[in-house]
Each structure stands twice: as C-alpha cells, then as structure tokens.
Length: 79
Length: 212
Image (tube, rainbow over all chains, first blue to last red; front, side, top):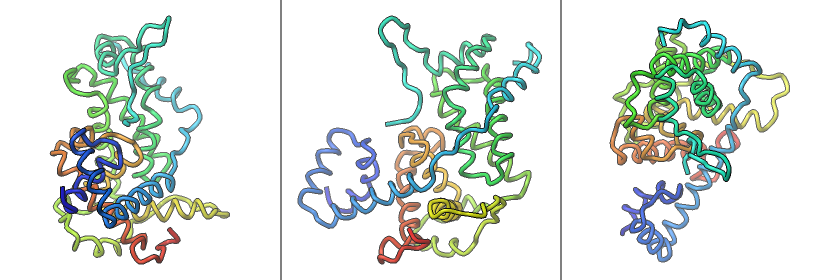
C-alpha cells in the first residue's frame, strides 16, 4: 500500500473501521513511513479538537413532556 | 464505534428490543414503543439539529417535528433497513425544509465542487448567526462559536458527513446509507472537509486560526 492509498483510507483507520487486511497493510505502511505517521497523528488531533470544540448541549427541560403531549393529541387512527 | 443503540441483555432481563422491532411495535399502535425510541434518540437528534440551526426555539421545534414524523410514518418504515438511517434522513429533511422556509441559511450549491481549489472562496461567505452571544463569553465558548462558523462554511454535503461522523459518531457505512451514496464518496467528503478545516484552522503553518 502506498502513501496515496493510505491517505484515502486513513479515516477508517483512525475510527477503527478498517477491515482486517486493510488494517494490517496500513499498520505496516505507517511503521516504515514517517510522513504518513505524522499525517495520521495530525488528522487524529484535528478530529479530537473538532469533537471537543463543540460539546453537546443538554436538551431543554420538559422537552419530552411537550413532545408526548403532541403525540397524545394525535387521533388514534392517524398514527 | 457507533453511538447508535446497541441491543443489550443483562442477566435476568430480557434483551432490549432492537430499534427496528420497536418501530414495528409502534406501527402496530404501541405508543410505549414510541417512548422508548424517543428516549434512545432524542438527545442525539436534538444536538444534530442544534449544530446546524442557530435559533434554540427552532431546534426544539425541528426535533419535535422529527419525532412526530417517526410517530406518524412508522407504518412506512422498511424493516429491512436500519432505523437510525431512516431517522437521520428525516432529520436532514426537516433541517432542509427549515432553511428553505426561513431563508436563514444560504447554503452552498449541492453542485459545489469538492476539490481542493474550491475551499477558500467559501471561507469569506459567512453565514448570518442569529444566536445571542453571552456577555461574558469564555475562551471555550469563543472556541466553540468560531469552530461552528468554520463548519458552517463547509459545503452542505461535506458538513453533513463531518457532523454525522465527528459528533454523532456514526460509522462511515451508516453515513453512506443516510446520504445514499457510496462509501468512497463519504470518505472523500470527509477528507476534503477536514483538509479545509485544517487549512482554515491554520494547523498546517502553525498559526492557529481563531486561536485553534
């Protein structure tokens, strides 16, 4: 597997979604290619910054009750 | 690992129904099944919408609409398909309908090329942000707001992939199903989106854009 191919598959690798063969080939490539190792580390770092940079908000209080109220207002035969 | 609900069965308890089984029960008139579906997914859908729609009130309304559609359309759900794909497709459609209705977001053309050369022109086209900025904004708030602006500037299809992957933690296969495109296309969109974001964030030249 060459550098170009590794870069195409690197996201699946980072997220642990590579299949067995792909995983073996990417790992082998990363062991011998410093540039791809650095690129992989940089991408992983950016993804982490993105994830941590916009945390989830709590759902507003009473939200479930408001939705269920609407659901219960729907006539039985329209579901 | 996907954030979607996993079937579980602890000793002494029957295994939880799958999402697809629950929708089947809902379609058969079991409102209790709706409660379970809602409990499993409302936080995820709320936050998926919240990262794309600026007004808090609209986020709640749209999330409500998504679950109303689930309730009303459960009979149309194809049980051979994955529930989460169907759910996120409904959410995406609601968001698009909202943008169309309000004109709040000037989205980029669906035909916007995804090549490397298309990115920086989009950077200047800031999207109107209607949210109220708190008086005492912390560094972390500022970071989040600026990051959101950057993500907002991505072409729609790339933005969708980033939001579904990074924040909803779906697998690339699930995203391909939601976006109705090949896995390779999803991976390309992810790659182009992250390349743009890293350029905009200044990650390549060591100068942090927006302090990132």
